[in-house]
Amino acid sequence: MSSPDPQVRAARNHSTSPPLRGPVVAVTGAASGVGAMLTERLAASEEIKQVIAIDERRGECEGAQWQILDVRDPAIAEKLRGADVVVHLALDLDLETDAAAVSTVCVPRTLYA
Image 1 (cartoon, helix red, strand yellow):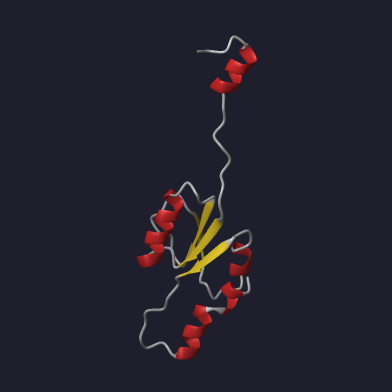
Image 2 (cartoon, rainbow, N blue to C red):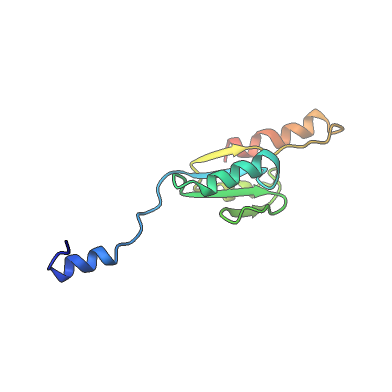
């Protein structure tokens, strides 16, 4: 049954979608592998407000906000601003890389951003 009040009907007919809820999630290593799969799932979730996808190249997920950079770049701190959660999946798969070089990818800039 429709309300006779025109303002009530107008409010019902012109309702806006609910505001986005949930966290802003940043994913490093988002262009491939596990990072790409997670980025797609998060971007498709109604419980996630925004996905910030970070990698050296753009991936295929259209629902993410892409930031193209190396996780060792000091600019990552600015790119992570506003993120509630960081999922760090950037990985150097080169078995020839020394341990010191690997450690520059694994923690420092994202941990303290």
